[in-house]
Length: 287
Image (cartoon, rainbow, N blue to C red):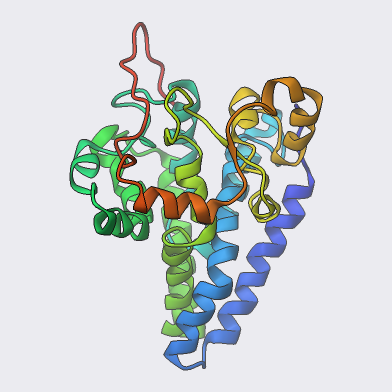
């Protein structure tokens, strides 16, 4: 349980890579702007969101420099185009403390989502629009007072977006936002949203994924390991599995996030309702 300083350089390089991409797409035809947003930018931006996940656990600078992690998360947020880092930290800590908590864990779909997105076509649309549901769901399930860091995150992000628009043009701005929307929607990496906690097998609430896309996602696929030891950086989660193989190797797990997406959409027994929801007892301390 110690920081992973390599995150600092990896995240910085990803942000700089997207800045170069913003410049390269500014004069392309619109069809190529959208093509590269999906083929390249979506992978970078989704990876950045999972880098922010690492930073939310203070994995970059450690718990003794918690504010350094918050500021670095705001920096990592820049190529995503939408202020995200600070709010994610607040809600994600609740997700770990109160997994599946009714009215607390905003990773749980709303009743409307479970009721409406229940057919193959509707579930497909739900997968495409996942980033919008994740963005607006907290406002309905567990709204929180706006913090000063969220205001700072928003001001810095909007200022950055305006600079991109005026310096590089609308195509670079569209590339940035489309990369986030497409990368968090119908995209192979987005399989982790469903793979992590949807009950494809009754009695098993959390699943790990041991496929190659962990290389792009800071090992977020090692999800049972992550929930058992949230203060261990993603880099070391494969070592957790190796050390405690008798606890993890026999658990149900995935090797393909694409297969997870396909099964979710086509399996009539699986829907946004396929989650474990708990009614909390005792005192609840929210982030």
